[in-house]
Length: 349
Ligand code: ZN
Ligand code: ZN
Image (tube, rainbow, N blue to C red; front, side, top):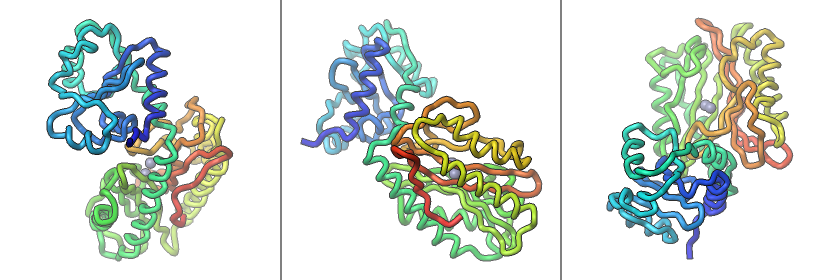
């Protein structure tokens, strides 16, 4: 019989509940449910019990899909959730603090006697370490992202706008994958000084640098990469900044290994850019985890104490932004291995 491909993660979550003396948790977040069961469903409550099997509550529309994709899972009507005896008599329950307030109010009513404990960090920590199957999906998504980038940039022509270029990328992502993991960022020239610039009607003259931050979704998993089209004759300042950002990116990739903290990894790039007087121009974190969602744990930011472990995914994306002038960011997705890291992005940089 088919079994839950995420059974080990679900078991680890149940151990976490026992360690926190919580008899159960009501998991509602779509990505959290998928990361524990493999089931993609946007209206469900996964009742995870510390000492017995989980129950999947959903509505009529999704029941056949759950039966087909997860035959091992007990399924109940979500309308019966609040009356279920394990719920109405429960004294302590785990919940995700990320849920919308209206949903939280409904959930709280179903647990009239329970004290609530936030289990979001436990779930995030478990999701940060990818299973071998998830690593394979991330590899495939990032590989497709590389292919789309080379197909897209071959179509860029002077006279096109940022919106035209973003549209080319978006269409390729829909054709070849499951669309965008996030809204594609295209910045021509000084627009790249805005880290998350929204593509507009700025026209490419064929000589300005272009920054593109893009990620395609494939089999439910995201990818993420930033590349720059460097003009043949960049300004001296642009050339200097590009070289330093690339060096910061390569140094961090070289340093990334299990056992170090994400704060230490961030410092590798940050200290290097600071030593060249661009520390203040690198105003964001070095990177973030990528998986079912585009931004997941861990976050590699200054001072963060999360210890890197094999199987963690992480972007390495140092950048330098000089307002009104230029911006360069170079972003790769890596997987932490037993000895260092595997770089999943293969596009030239
Ligand atoms: Zn990105
Ligand atoms: Zn990113």
